[in-house]
Length: 87
Image 1 (tube, rainbow, N blue to C red):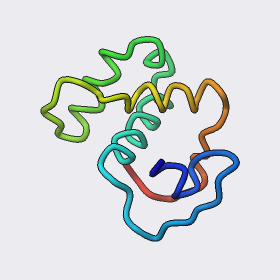
Image 2 (tube, one colour):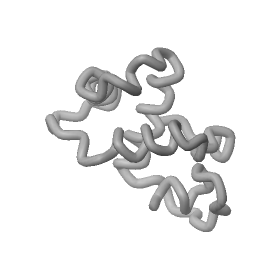
Image 3 (cartoon, helix red, strand yellow):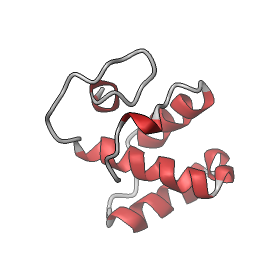
């Protein structure tokens, strides 16, 4: 929901001026890591390890963050240019 509210999802107009929540920031980080290595899309455990290392996350589970990002990528629904927010 946070990504959609901030205009990162095709079909949704940005409607929030509040900062992105934690999982949305994790998702943005995941997207940037995916750009650097698209094979991560099919290697979620390694993808999550990279996100966790980049963001300083200690939890082992990705809580659906990568599932959402992978789906948005696969359906060409993620709009990276929607925000200039860095992960």
